[in-house]
Length: 270
Image: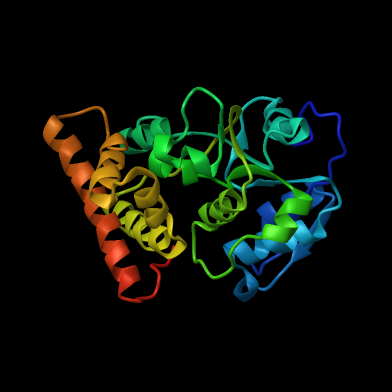
């Protein structure tokens, strides 16, 4: 972060919920940041902790970077906040580069993080479908005043970034996707993690009303748009049978999560 080319004021803050400030990684992080706050692990929540950071922010923009995401180049920060400075969006997220050699992650990231920048509003649902609502706070920036008003949802076990994106879009705001603000991030995902993650997508998108918005905008429900999206994030390499199998697995997991949400079952944990 210190090596980024950026002329504005920067305060680097960290919130540690590990419960062990003596860990070597924590000692190194603490020495590198301007402010450090330790909270008990039980107080951590993806939405709650990010709202805590926004409330403490003293700059016009608040930038989030996950601890395992590494900026690619020294222009990451300037690129990420540029849409906010220009006033074309109130929030922005950057590109994530998949782990090399992981066909599933490469296909998913290629769909979610295209080469061209985008400005998205609620009016784009008919054109972009489910991807309108995609937003990742792994590498993201917000106007601090807007985020303090809208806030991350604190009742979601994961996908709090999709939740805040939905709130912003519903409020008439624009979101920016900035491929120039790239980070290396992402873990290999086995079959079990894929199923769990896409169950979470189905359950949380249903809870947030995203499938309803999709139906209203396009006239298509989950079977049409959802399966097409699942196909788009299936691996491009290997046999056609494998690609179809992965797409079917993801589509079925989303459908299962949606059904579980409708039945009032607890959201799948992260």
